[in-house]
Every structure is written in structure tokens, then in C-alpha cells.
Length: 209
Image: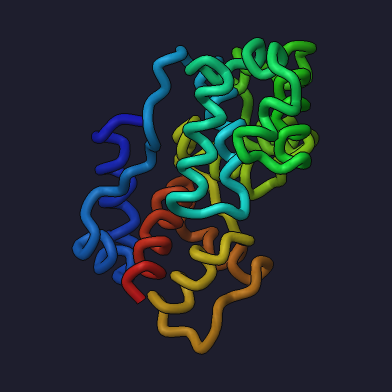
């Protein structure tokens, strides 16, 4: 995703919708990439998914500390091979729950046997990425959508179950309450094919609200 593509997306959203124009003025260009991986594309996909599982229901310093210990247990590189080379008890010793340790080991198994096609993920359409990832333990549709936006940098993802997007829409558009996911799906149609960018601005609206 280039800066030029994002600039086009922001300009078109602003032209269509005065609320989006105001949010763009307030918050500037969207940032739809999290930290870059040093492991290469395919291994980086695994690293990002494992981190997503680890961070579920954890926040702040506690999550970061557990993640650091997890990386240390694996010798510094979060790869399927590294995960499967250590016993589950070692993952638990880093602070992972039994459920998360099992889910990350299952993720590694799926990567090794082909159920998780790491090398092909970036070439799959959005709905197929969601289908493949949601079939794995510990990953649901929301996690798959965040992976699409922040790892694969897909521009037209609309996470209608996301609390921040729902709340941000209600705040930005002066609604009395958050729209339900079904209603939000319809409301988002006018943002195609830039719904990821619209979602990013609604997250900012939630933070500012």
C-alpha cells in the first residue's frame, strides 16, 4: 500500500462524505501498517498471527512483557519451526495460558502441513483469507480482518463487529447509539472500495470521543 494510494482513498472519501473530510483534517493520513517483520513476508505473517493470539484479552505492559518472554523462549524468531521445537510447558512458562499455547502450537502445525498457506496468503481474496484463518483455533473473523488491514494492507475491509468502528460511527455521525453490525454493513457501502481507511478514521473518532 503506497502513500499515493492512501492519498487517493482519503481524497475520495472526503469528497463523498463531509464527516470523513472533517476526520481526515483532524487526524491526517491513515497509518495502516504495524511493525515490519525482519523474517520475510511468509514468516512475518506467522509472527503477526501468533502475536494476535497472544495479545487477545491482554493489554499494555502485561501483554508486552509476556510477548517478550515468548520471543525469548523461541530464541528470538517467532516461526512455526521454533514454536514446535519447544514443549508447550515452555510456552506456558512465558506466561501464555494453556489455551493460547495450544492455539499457537496449532497455528504452527497448520503452517507446516499446509492448512495455513503462509506463502499464498497475500494472493488470496479477502473472503478467502478470512475463511482460512477463521478455521484455525484461536483466530476468529475479527482477528482475520485486522490481519487483512494491518498485515496485508487491504483497503476495503469493513469490520462491522468491531466496537471501536461501531462507537466511532455513532460519535462521528451524531447517532444516539452505536449502529448494529447489520446496519453498519449497509452504512459502509458508500465507502467502497476504501472501507479500511474509513474504519481507521472511525477508530480515531472513538479515541477522540
